[in-house]
Amino acid sequence: MAVRPRVIINAAMSVDGKIALSDRNGVRLSNEEDLRRVHRLRAAVDAILVGVGTVLKDDPKLTVKAEYAKGRNPLRVVLDSDGKTPATSHVLDGSAPTLIVTSEECERTFPPAEVLRIGKDEVDLPVLLDRLEARNIRSILVEGGSTVIWSFLRKGLADELKVFVSSRVLGGHAAPTLAGGPGVASLDEAPRLRLDRIERLGDGALLEYAVVR
Ligand SMILES: NC(=O)c1ccc[n+]([C@@H]2O[C@H](COP(=O)([O-])OP(=O)(O)OC[C@H]3O[C@@H](n4cnc5c(N)ncnc54)[C@H](OP(=O)(O)O)[C@@H]3O)[C@@H](O)[C@H]2O)c1
Image (cartoon, rainbow, N blue to C red; front, side, top):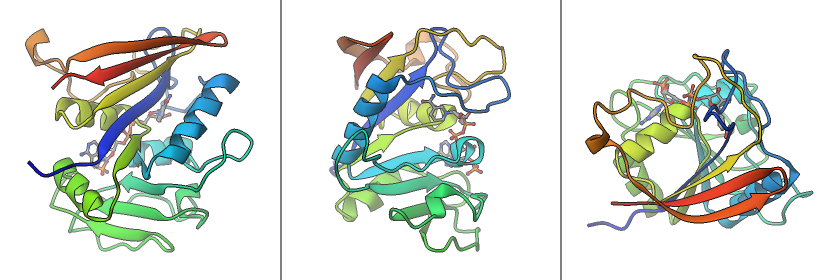
């Protein structure tokens, strides 16, 4: 089997498993200790990946913030089959290299970002991982959102899951949870994790899992 980049999923959630508010607007669930950890993690990987839903709702910069960590900015990768990333998005601000991954049908360009066109519908993740590996991308930090995290877990493409549990309860039926998508029909189909480490981080907890294959 071809070698694929190591995929680490990272997210912050409330005690009730929500990663944003009911209107899907982002909310800062990480505390200062967790932000330092996340920025160090960013500085240690080759690429950071998010879905277009996260770009539209949170407009993240996905760079390494100097106040938390030292290091170069990894490649920013956005899964965006239909090309909906707004031209004013931080991922298109030129502060770090960016790759927008669309379908072959999408003709839009995203200066100054590079465009990679794959397949017809949603981005085929195994193909994407192979293409990234061919560019010497050995490690990828998946930072959301809910739908993208589900896709990586369901397809067995993630190696690790790191989740910071904030001491907050957000509630809300419609609020996105750590993993969205269609879900499983039975426990037998549920991706299995192995809890490797628990660490108290200020007023929250970091849980680190390995994905069992
Ligand atoms: N607390 C945290 O750690 C955290 C971190 C990040 C985001 N968030 C929250 O998460 C929410 C966004 O999550 P979301 O589920 O709405 O959007 P998302 O997961 O960021 O993006 C999903 C979109 O990515 C595109 N996509 C392309 N290929 C895909 C594939 N193979 N698998 C999955 N998606 C693919 C699809 O849009 P197209 O079909 O148009 O390509 C899909 O609708 C926001 O509320 C945000 O605040 C929280």
